[in-house]
Length: 104
Image (cartoon, rainbow, N blue to C red):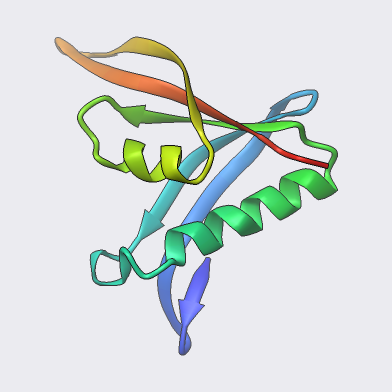
């Protein structure tokens, strides 16, 4: 959780998924706080924790129509593959899977 003056402003959720690999499941920054460096600060903290646990990379899914893809590319993530995941009732998640290697 990221706070600004004791007010929650952002959140990152991640976990180890395999030896050396971590999955970023969630990264949220309040709309009023976006483009203020908070997303980079959250990801920097995630990377520090991943590195301290011996992690080699972080992966995430981002919808192919989500402009956040460009934010992730700007901070070092690259396109690994595309995925189409059926979530039921005729709906699909059409995602890019992106990865960033963690430097030790």
